[in-house]
Length: 57
Image (cartoon, rainbow, N blue to C red; front, side, top):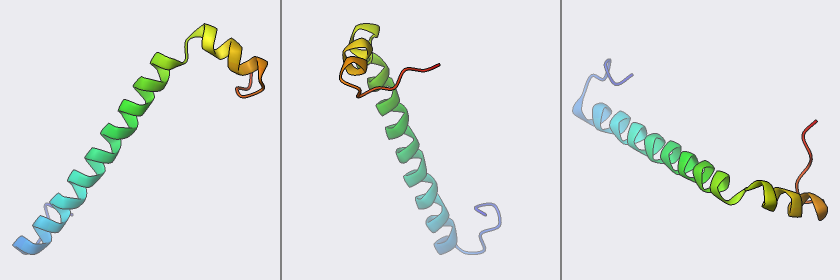
């Protein structure tokens, strides 16, 4: 869509959307990284004991 933009306004709009989506994806990836850091095997056992984390089969 960005390649087919026919005006500067359209181009700016599509760039803005791309920037927003990039930021959202980066935030998601950072949250995943933080979750992996916090979810150690020991923490997983505690969460399972309180039924807060389902065991994978």
